[in-house]
Image 1 (cartoon, one colour):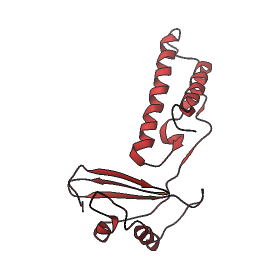
Image 2: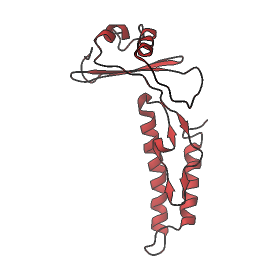
Image 3: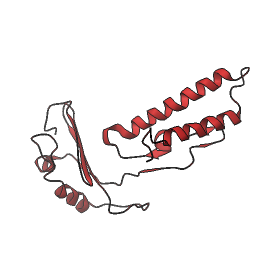
Image 4: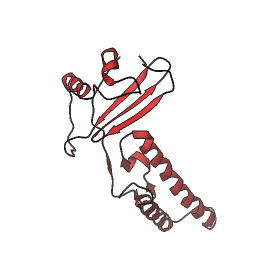
Length: 167
């Protein structure tokens, strides 16, 4: 059950840990984040004991200005634990196929960062494609060579320090 009025949201961070909390009319959602000790590509199966250990570790973390994790944990409707994959693939296109958003860069969910980067991908890509379509002779659209150049430029722009995906 939500411990605060509907519409509240908090993103609280400290070294190696973070919490996101959102409240709805009847329920609140709490996301606890903890940096893994080392990068892994292995699948991890967590037990209920693991879930409880993370909850205990976060017990004193604030959800709001007046509520801590330990205040809501006993009344939780459900809880689970999973790893959140992060990373950036090297190749974002092949021929006439191009990737955007989580298909080419996955990141934690803090403040909608992944979603917002996906929107930026689409804007950069669509602006370039629009120019190429308008410049293409006839109704055949841009050539494969032009598309390759657009996709390479899109990757370069999105990976530049200006866009903060890499750096």
